[in-house]
Image 1 (cartoon, rainbow, N blue to C red):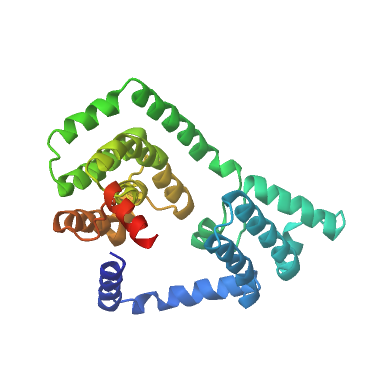
Image 2: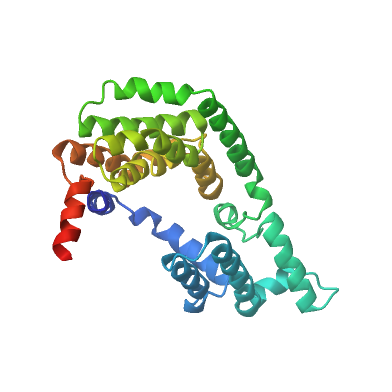
Length: 288
């Protein structure tokens, strides 16, 4: 999926005429240079954040340290910008602390003289995430309700009646994850609920748990940003200021991966089986 997406992006990149945008690119570059101190040191907080993510440090300390390091870097390396934004009637250290705290809460705002850059650079803060958090709460409560009354279980049981082969089972799982994304408006519900409902069926058919885990990602995780009212789609819209309906046609990986997963399932590629208990016993006996 990554390879196909990369090929498609490469084709689009070479077939698109961008010469008319050079003036705009230069204008944006000049405005950024005038308002920010841009150098390689600015990448250090991002590098630290990615390193912690690769090493699987828990999300809370990773995000907290990343934000704290970004604030320190702003005070140390963006002093000209900070001097324009802080209050002038108090000390620089106290004014910087007050400004950073305000940015953490309400987000960053700047007037560069370029309306497009203002929209791109301004935003963020905990307050801006409240609508998304409320959407998550509502989606979780709605998902819990339809799970408790057995609506989704009844739906899955009717699907399993027609899912006779491994390919049809994985296809059904992907479809269920996508439908759950649409109905419950939350990525987590599209992973947790179908996972719990299909778990026994995968075990009964001697399919390793990794098949179910991978299928939940294929059908639930990567399709959620394509749905505008889903929590992921709402988050992307709030950050990028672009509707999922606009960028969905270019989300090649998100569109291709579920299709490839279905093709792999019907072709029997990367479909892992559980080791029968008697085989495990024979292997242990042979090693002994």
